[in-house]
Length: 269
Image 1 (cartoon, one colour):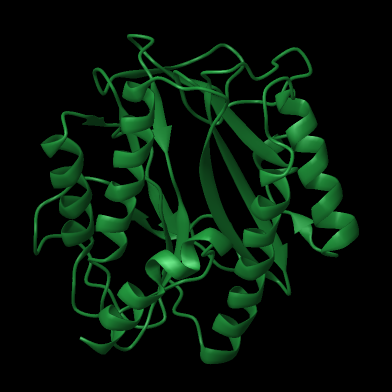
Image 2 (cartoon, rainbow, N blue to C red):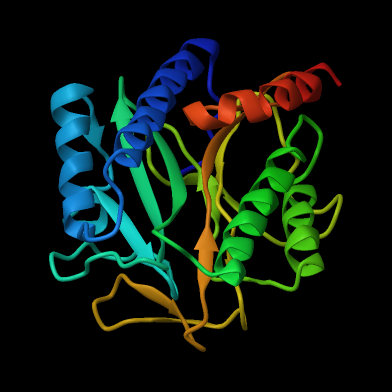
């Protein structure tokens, strides 16, 4: 991990543009992710769109030797699922698509859950409560709050609804590098940990499991799965700490109406 880097106003402007472009990739994929598409098709569509339409760079490709533009984590895959021509989405699947994008020298990182066809009520509940847990963490972000406050907000929401939190993988600082300080745990104690400061940029990306928190790494060296084969879900945004609260740099089109009033209220308080 690199040292903690506070972003200047011009740097935040560049990150804001990177985040806007990344959000548009999900809007594009929304038109294509459906029953029958392979996870490699999703990868190829996103990579082509980022390079040819956005004139940007898929930042995951080549990072740590990874060969693809994104991760596709289906059902009991917790994170870092590798795209495959042989893996075609079926009705009832839930899949996390995790994408990083670099533009203007700055990287943003975001992921979204897709529910394919007709999913079970239990699967939908997991997806929805994981999304709510991410937002609980986001809304805890403000200057002088701590990372423990963020983690506690996520943990409290997850455990209230009967889910376990994956502890081996966490959010992180982000900017010129994909992974910067600090590490952002999705569990914690209020008032503990690093104090948040204006200019910090970080990801909040909780992974919640239906069953036990225990996970294992598959032999490919990338794919992380639940040990009990029960479902897992994850959502992620890149966040900036502002002078009065937070700004979601990767907010997607469908989220603007839902959360804009809440975000304005947060920044005023």
